[in-house]
Image: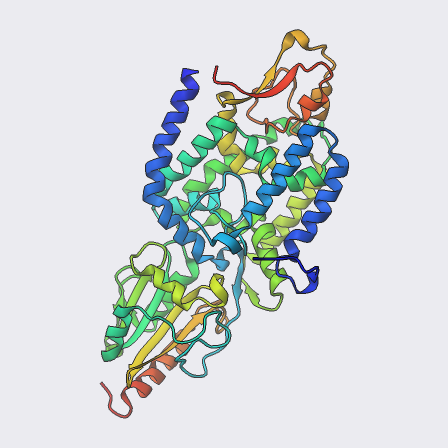
Length: 198
Length: 289
């Protein structure tokens, strides 16, 4: 009896504080629904124009509730949200591609935009673990199974314009190519600042 | 509230409930005894609970059996997925939660989750693979421990979810259901073909061998198996009642050497042997002593 009771107590002693510490992070991992992990990526529509409201391919309707720290920053700069996870290979491939193209510097963890892109503020967010990582849910398509990877936003005349890559955008399963990304950032710069280059 | 309107062609849950209904029909015909009917009811209930994210949303709970958390309706987290994340992401604080949950479940129930809750176990009960007498069969059981032992170092070194990439259970319970829901909605990564080939191998295995996946390859079963020696739920053997007819050994889906090996780490507490015993020399019971 003692052996079983001690084993059960030990297990409970592990499980209770373990659940207290890790439950929310396990939930975040579960919510993220990494389709890349099961060998597939959802197709996404290609970039045509920036959105104000959710387009038809999203479950939600109306204007997204962009986080306040994004809204504040988008008044001054174009904002790029780069969502990644520690064991996400496509995330790392995209980061390395952007780095090789001279778009970003540093690592995913403490990355920043390169000097040529000083008009862009980068938020590189470890989606399951950063405190702002759950902002990923705002940009989910179809109610949560199609995870966004990169979101570009800017403010003009008190309106937030945005575009999110969710799913296969240009052959790299949910990940934009560097050329496509730089084209969209350039378009955002034109629309935000008009002819006046920052 | 989801209500069946019998319009399966338009229903997103058809991939789940049509096989379930066919399986339940076949199983009820096969499962004769009361204990086995209870077990089937438990397995079907767990299959339903496993897929209730459409009611409760995705939670931070962990399954104590094998099911992919990338599945469209998956409620909880895959234990192997959590283990992989702990090592690939260096998120060590996930481990006490994982081992604690498995510890509690396994100290109380032993490996009963394989027999009473796991949807993959239910599938194998339905496919009813054959019994094998190959001499390698006994040794092959250690493969699952080797797989479990390999997952942490490989994930740590590569920084990837190495097992998930090729996991046949993920292919069956996540990749295929997503494809069934939206056949034209996806592109595939380089792991798709290997994953599907491994899934085909999985089906060959469970069709050819009784509980082939559980006995030889399931890393979740390997996590729980050793707890059978001390679990509160015991398969009890009363030697004085035994007439050595060995009917228990003949029906055991895990091919354990019954009745002498009743505390084997392979036992899934399914109770098939209990039902087969003509003298009640075997019983499933919760015992603290």
